[in-house]
Image 1 (cartoon, rainbow, N blue to C red):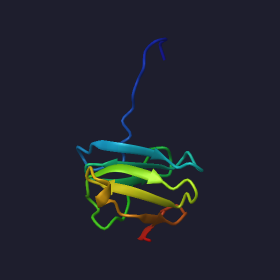
Image 2: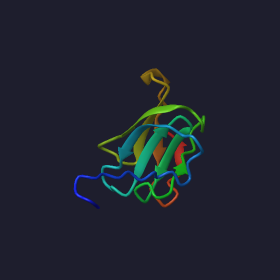
Image 3: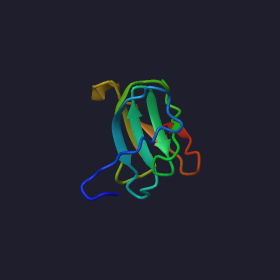
Length: 104
């Protein structure tokens, strides 16, 4: 890389076409795991964005504006659909490769 030159790489493998990212959250205990909130749902990557998997939310294509990981229980996170916290759904992640999601 040339000094002073910056380069961005699109990490879109597994994301729907024309997806816009609103939020990025890195798992506090495992920096390989990244969550994103997008215009087409919430996604999780187990390899720092190399491949994305859609999270099984009640509305899988909800417009997710924020994702917060509970600092006391890294298996629990809260995606916020729309721009209002009143539309938030509390979700619980089970650890593992596929990280299935269930309502808590």
